[in-house]
Structure formats: C-alpha cells, structure tokens
Image 1 (tube, rainbow, N blue to C red):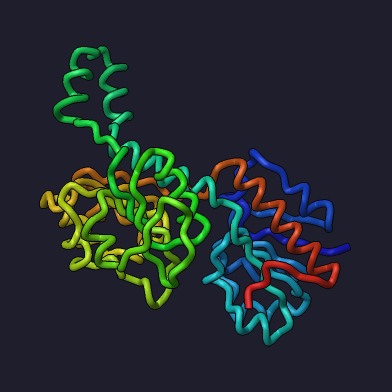
Image 2 (cartoon, rainbow, N blue to C red):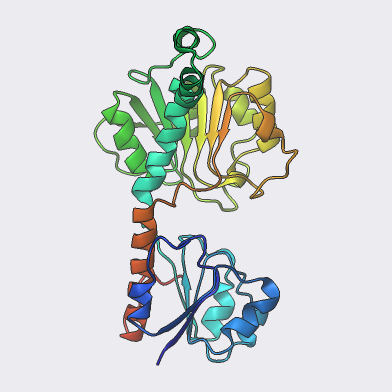
Length: 317
C-alpha cells in the first residue's frame, strides 16, 4: 500500500476537517508539526510526503530514497528544492487556486474594519456606553464610505480579479496594475504603477513575492500615497517596507493599513507595526476558512491520484 506521510498538517487540519481524501489513496500517517531534526526519521518510509512549511532540501531528499511525490498543502513551494526534486525524479505538486474567494473576503474584512471600526464601536456598546458609542461613531471613529472611492489593485491574478469584483459591487472605481498587462473586466481601468499609488483611496496588494516585487512598496512609494489612503496586504509581507509603513502611519502620512502577512511570522514582540497607529494585523489566516481547507485537502489528494494514474497535475516545474 502507498505510504503517505503528512509532516505538518496541523495548520491545515487542526481537527475540524478530514484527511479522508488522502486515506482513500493509501496509508496515512499525519503529524501536526515536525521539527527539522525529525523530518527524515518520520518520512523515511514515505512514498509521498504532504507538507506545508517543512523544508524539503536536497539533503533531506538524499536521505529519502523511497520518496516519489511531494504534495504542498499550499500554493507556495519556496521551502522545496524543486531543482533537486526534478533531478531525483520526485514529482512536486502545489494547489494554485483553492483560497481565491476566502483571501479576497479577508482583504475586504480588513478594509471594512478600517472604514467602519466595527469591533471598537461594538466593544464600547457592549460595555454599556450606547450614547458614547454613537458619539464615537462620528468623531473618534469616523466612518469612511467606499462608494465612489478609487480601489487600486496591484497584482491581477485570480485573487486580484475577485477583489475587483467586490470593489465594483460596492460602487468603487477600480484601477489595476500588474506585471503583465491583461484584459480587464468591465469597470476596471489599467494604469501605470505610480498612478495607482498616487491616485487610489485604497491600495490592495495581490502580487506574488519574487525578485521583482520584493520591497516594491518602498518608502518612496508609500510617500506617493494620499494621506487619507488605506493600504491592504494579503499577498506577502516582504513586498513592502514595514518600517516605512510604520513611520507613515505614525506620522499621519497614511490613514490606515490592514495586514494579514508580515516579513517575519510571527513578528517579534517589539515589532514597529504592532504598535503603529491605525494598523490592523491578522495572523496569516486569509487562506484558512474551513471551506478553503477542505478544498485544499481534496485537491492535494487529486494531485496525488493524478500522479499515480500517470497524468500529474499542478506540477511545479
């Protein structure tokens, strides 16, 4: 029987979903997490390894002669030495589109919290201060209407397109910039990079992290933005200069930021953004709705079955 080892399944499945799609294919041993020093020991008899953030280096693969398949429980695969896997005849597959809708939803959850301050006002109301909460709604927590405002989307893959649809549904003007110019849905307008950051009332980042985008939202780029603008990042933390963002927020040169990703995850306790003004941070959970995680497991199993059937899909080359 095929031996399948899940090395760090805890983030994908903390116990509220099932590994049944993989169990239908072979014998599954699932670990919530695996320290680096135990990876080889736990995977030594595996035909297929399923992992999320485990480092699958050349040295690890050298020690796993039975290994034929690596399935990423994610879209990203930066912890896998894909070149070494290819040389060793190990197929590597990822899951590109499992969380498009849930990431787009989280981007707007962050944005709407910055606009409506729902949590802060609700906490005041629940504390018995209804009159105070009404006062706060119009003064210290002024509400920000999105209809008629300009939404700038940097990066226009599947998630960017979904965010554009949500923005259009709210009556926003949508402007777009991406690495490659693409056909846009009705209601969206293509602009250059500088125009996007200078004119948008909200900038939402949806670009991949690569050599061309690392640090692209720099101090100079943040300085282009309106002081009334909001910045949303559900892409990757390293696409923006975090220290520059903290300075812009604290100095009133940017109205607010909503982040689901950071350069270092989790951040240090003294990280500048943890105490920055008008900064909302969630712990890289945009992908993690139960529906998305169930979909993720099904597609990982489909990837493995397709590999076994001789027509692999979602192969990382």
